[in-house]
Structures are given as C-alpha cells and as structure tokens.
Amino acid sequence: MRNERVMQIRVKVGSALLGLLFVLSATVSWIAPQDPDRQHLETSGRLQAPSVSHPFGTDQLGRDVLSRVLHGSRISLGLALITMLLAVILGTSYGALSGYVGGATDRILMRFVDLFLTFPLIFFVATCIALFGNQLSIMAIILALTAWMDIARLVRGDVLVLKRENFVLRARTSGLPVWRIFLRYVLPATLPTVTAAAVLRMADLILIESAMSFLGLGVQPPTATWGTILKDGRHFLSDAWWLAFFPGVAILLACLSLYLIGEGFQKHTAKQIQSVR
Amino acid sequence: MQKQSDKSEILHVSRLSVHYHDQKSVVRAVDDVSFSVKKGQTLAVVGESGCGKSTLALSLFRLLPPAGQLVSGQILLHGQDLATKSEKYMQAIRGKEIGLILQDALSALNPVLRIGTQIAELYQHHFRDDRRNAKRKALDMLAKVSLPNVERTYTLYPHQLSGGQRQRVAIALALACKPKLLVADEPTTALDVSLQNGILALLSNLQQEMGLAVLLISHDLGVVAQMADQIAVMYAGRIVEQGPSADVFQLPVHPYTKMLLEAMPRMLPGQGFKKTYRISGQNHEVPDLRNLPAGCAFAPRCPLRLPACSDILPTETAIRSNHIVRCLQSGQNQ
Image (cartoon, rainbow over all chains, first blue to last red; front, top):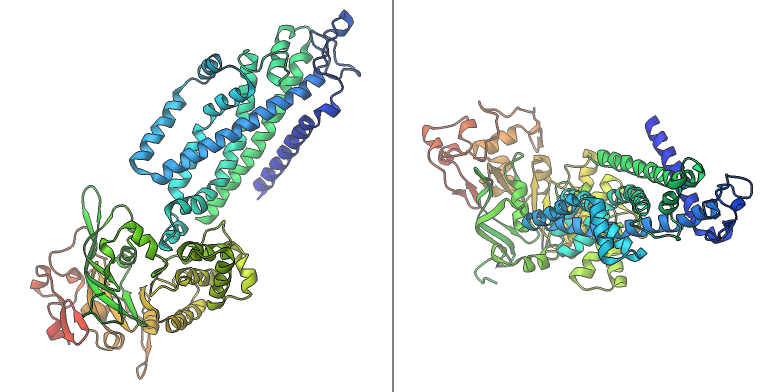
C-alpha cells in the first residue's frame, strides 16, 4: 500500500519533470535569453562564470550556455523521441508477429534478434554513420536499429501468453479471421508492456545520442545538443566547470524523469498481471 | 444432405476419436464417441474432470490445441462432415452455424473492446452488415439475453459488468448469428449458485425460441437434470452410458452412472431428499489416460468387476430403445 503511494509519487514527479523539459524545449525560441550561436570573442565575453546576465556562464566562444542547453534540448529530446517511436513500431510489430505465428518461423525470427543484440553498439553506430552520413533522419534510423530488439523480445513473450488467453480462443470460436484477432484482440493487450519498455528505452536513447555526440560521431558542431556542449566543455573542465556541468545536469534530469515514469509503469503492469491470475 | 437421416437431427457424431500426442505417449482424450443432437433438444455430456468433455467440445469446432489430433470419425452437421472440411470453411461456420460458450466465460470477453463492439463485429464479419445494422442487431441481442439498459450496456467495457452480466454477454456472443447448434461447456460453473438458475432459464428460453440443438457439457448433475433430454455419461474418453434423461436418472445401468448418481444430493419426485453418498469403490483415482487398461477403463474402480473386465473392451449394447451401455454385465445389471 505504502509502496504503491511512493510509486505513484515517483510517476508524478517524473511526469512533471519530463513535462517541464518538453515545454522548455518547445518554447525555446521565446524563452532562450540569446541566440545560441552568437559569439562574443572579446576576452571579457569568453568562459565567463555563471552570473545574472549569463546564468549558466559562457563557453570558449562567448556563447550563452543557458541558451545552448535550451536549444540543445530540442534535438536531444526530439531525436530520442522519434528514435523511440521508430524502435517501438519496429520492435512491436516484429515481436508480435513472431510470437503470434509461432513455431519454426518464430525461432528463426528470434535468432535474428539475438544476432542484432550481439553487435557492439558503438561500433555498429560508428560504421553506419561512416557509411550513410550523420543527418538527423539517418541518425534516428540508425539509433532505432540498435533499440528495437528488447522491445521485440518483451512483446513476443506477451503475445505467446496472450494467444492462449480465453478471450482469444473465444474470438476463434466466433469465426473471426486470424489477422483480425491479431489486430483487435492480441496487439492492444501488449500496450502496457510496450509503454513501460518505450519510456525506459527513451532514457537510454538520450544517453546514447549524447555519448555519440560526445565522441564526435553524432550531431556536428556548431549545432547545439547536450552531447556536443558536453564535448566542448571537456577541454575546460578545470577552468570552467559550468560548461560540462549544465548539459550534464540536463541529461541527468531527463533520464531520471523517464526512469521514474518507466519504473512506475512496470510495477503497475506487474501488479495488474498478478491481480488477473 | 443425406436423405435417410432424420431431418430434425442437427449434429451427428459417429465414432469420433481425438488423441493428444507428446514425445513419449498418446492420450486418448476422446475414444470412439458417437451421439446425435436434434433440433430443440439438449444432450448433456456428464463425467468427472479430465474425462475428455472439453476436448470433445473443441474438436467439434476443430479448435484443438496443437498437440491434439482428430484421429478418426465423422462430425456431421446437417450431413456435412466437419472433420474433413478446410479451415476456411470452418471459419465461416464457427459462430454462424455453431456457437460455443466456453468453460470460463467470465474471461471470454476482450478487455479492451466495448461490449457492443464485440457483438456488432460478428454481424459485420459474418453477414457483411454495415455499422448501423450491426449495432441495431447487437442491441436486439443484448435485450434478448435480458441485460438491463441495453443502450448503456452497449457502451460498457467487460470489467464494468458483474459476473452474471458477463455470462449473459457470453451467451449473446455465442448466439448472435443464430446458430443451429449451441455447445455450452460448463455454462454455470464460474457463477454463484444464486445466479445459475437465471442463466439456465435464459438458455432454455432461447433454446425454445430459436429451436436450438444444445450440447451441454457439465459435471453438475443438478444442472443436467434441469436441462437435458438425453444424457451421455463419459468415462476416460468413452461414452459408457447414453439414453433419455429420465431413463438414465431413474434406471441407471452402468456401475459408474450409479456411482455418480449416488454421489449427488438430490430431490426426486416421490423420494424426498436423499443423503449424499461418497463415491464408492476401492480405487478413487481418476484413470491415467496415457495408460488405460486393455479392457473397461472403469474396471479398477468397479464394485461389480469380473475377471474378464480388465481384458475385454465392452462394446455399446442397446438395452432399451435409445438406451446404450458399455458394460460386460449390462445384461445382468438391469
């Protein structure tokens, strides 16, 4: 009982935090104090510590870090969101079909998932970016290709159980066609699992995108993302801590809020399953 | 259509056998079973858990689990042998010609679709009705199963209904497309005793109204006494006694039938209320269907066992018109 209340509070805090981040990134053109790319190259403008006029300080080119973090959130969050949606669509349809068809087809399809899981992540992404370029749309597809496998596995597991449920058998005794039962009886029932997995996935994707940008594989300067700001900051860690600190905090908050929500969903789903049995 | 068959005969099953295979063994869940159901009549299949009743129901719909296999026999629905039909043909008649109420009807509804949608989609699928027509028919059907306030019920989700109401929806789903045959697998076991009578009364009303042939599967002899015209007693996958309801209840022949009847608390006309007896016999175990004796499967539990019983499989013997028994001693036991 008490546990449940704590869980609910976590989901609420997580949602509020995430909502705030999304609102900030959506309204950034109005609220960001300065143009994120405007430089102040005179000595007095570069690497300024946080102050009233620059709450997050300025970087080595005199750009306002607050404005850059806010603008960066657009790409970091937006890319993670789109990538997550792509991964969910791919993973859910793949896993659900595999589980629903079953038999030898299922075994072969699942070995293919295992194969994908064995690719070293960074190596795979680096190779793909080298081959296909690093536009945002290509990045989204490449990152989605690294993220769909565990969603596919989870959904397949769900479907294997669901297709033996009484209401699915009943739909068959009513003479409904197999594809219709799949779309209207089996697939919707995987939604709780998919939601929880998707939210947790998105947190990982924010981290991966930042890591890629940090390594110089992802989004290229001067475009601001949390990863690229962090990358710039790494050269000045001892003199200008604020450069790496604030994008780091942004990444932390985004991931934290997603984990809080995802964990709450997972517990809730587990509970629902228990109450049905 | 076979001309020689009785026109009122809707389902005729002859010598049906269904086996489950696993790596090591074969389970004979249904073995050499024959019966028929007539228009407007109810045949009740009774027997203890694990005797093959539910397998029998699913085999009529050709919806056996992957390990199950229809080994031999005919399932004649209006003279058409369902045992040999394609999956496509079966899909077209499931729900339309034959309806099934599943054992656990409370979990038989899709939790994410509204009640009305689930019924209406059957009309849209089987009769190609447009939305409005399907909705009108679905509302009629909800009214037929005596659900209150059908307009509102139409828009509800299964979890918003009580157990009794969900059971009524399950009946509505099975009968929506006006099938000729209804298979009801334990239609009341998931319900409180107080609700059972209402559901049974509803079933017999609908049966009369629609001229349904009903195959009722139950282990509850009270339910069977109330509903059945004919009774088939199943033991270890075989029908051991079959006959008109009154005959089987009052003049049971097979020792197993007698044992079942004695175990039932009952009130029969002229006899008052009888005490409940425990199932008698030395061995109370339900037989292992993987490992049946060569002779009569009931022999190990039978109080009247003869040495020959364990070796010779008794055949179906008619002792009266329509009253059939599988027992070596059926002659002496009358």
